[in-house]
Image (cartoon, rainbow, N blue to C red; front, side):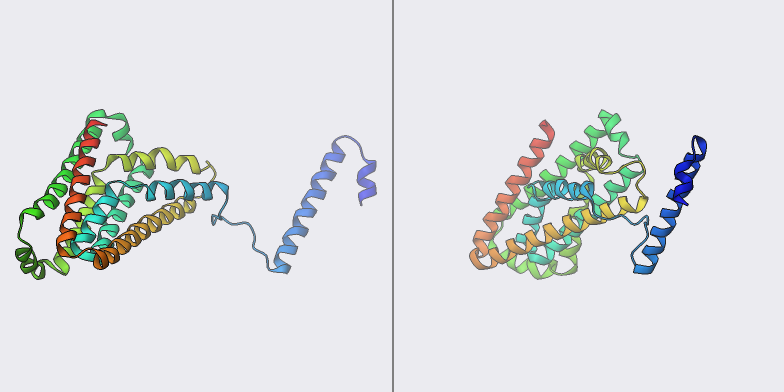
Length: 252
C-alpha cells in the first residue's frame, strides 16, 4: 500500500496522505480502547493556565484585607465557630460576585463610576460600623459582657457572623472587578464551561478553607495566651483596623 502511495504524484499523493493519517487515527483509537486509556473529553484537566490561576488567586486570598480582619474580629468575639460562619458568608459573597462577572453584570461597575462609588462608600460605611462596634466593647464592664454572652451565643451569633461576612463581601466592589479582569486571563475561547465551574469551585474551597484555618489559629492562640481582658483589647485593635480599612477605601 505504501509503495503505491509513494509512486503517485500531484493530488493523488494528498489523498494518500489523508488516507494514511485516517488509518493512523483509527489505529490510535483502537489502542486507546484496548489499553483502557481515556479518550479525549471535555472534562478540564490541570494545565499551566489552571495552575497559574490557583497561584494568583491563592496569593490574593492570603493577602490580609477586610475579609481577614473581619474573620479575626468575629473569632475573638465568638471563637472558631464564628470564624467558620464568617468564612462561609465571605464564600457566598465571592460566589455571587463570580456569577455576576460570568453574566456580565459587573461590567456595570466598570463602566459606571457613580455605581462603583456608591458600592465603595457603602462597603466603607459597613466596615466602619463594625469597627466602631468593636471599639465600643472597651466601654462596657467585663462582667456585663459575660452576663450577656449566653443570650447571644449559638444560633444568633452564628447568624451574625454569616451575615457580616456576606454583606461585607457583597459591598466590596473590588471583588467583582477582580473576577471580571482576572478570570478571562486563564480561559481560552475554546474551553468548555466546565472549566470555569471548576475554577470557581477551587476558589471557593481556597477562600473558605483559608479563612476558617486562620480563624482556628487565632481562636486557639486567644484561648491560650489572651484572657478575657486582653481579648477585649485585641478585639478593639481589630476595630481600629476595620475603621482604617474603611478610610483607605474612601480615599483610594
